[in-house]
Image (cartoon, rainbow, N blue to C red; front, side):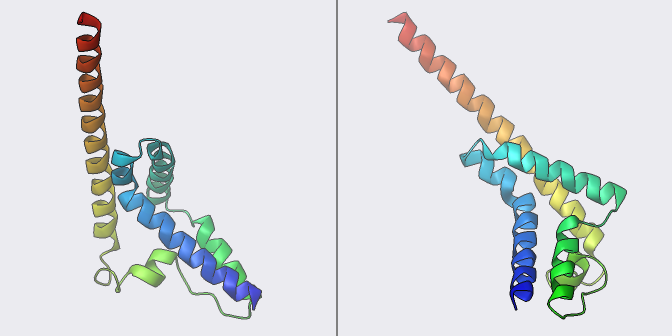
Length: 131
């Protein structure tokens, strides 16, 4: 019973991890320190997609499913839970490209906002020092 609950918890955490990959850069626009965690998640996902290795989160979920008496699914988390449900069957490579494009867009926006804030702070600081 507890193993199945832990497997379901890992499934939800894995989904949250992937959602953070997609939107975390945009969250950092508001909360700047989030960018460091998102950078780590982004690098991990780039390495994972490039080297095509099994995600440890999937392995932990499958372990708990096995321990709970279930037969674990074949393949990876994305193929099992998202492919054919969140996007059309077989479109995972396109979804990956969209995810990475969103990462790049969010980082460009982050740095644009950051530079505007710095310029504004510099202008406000120079106004204060002149008076």
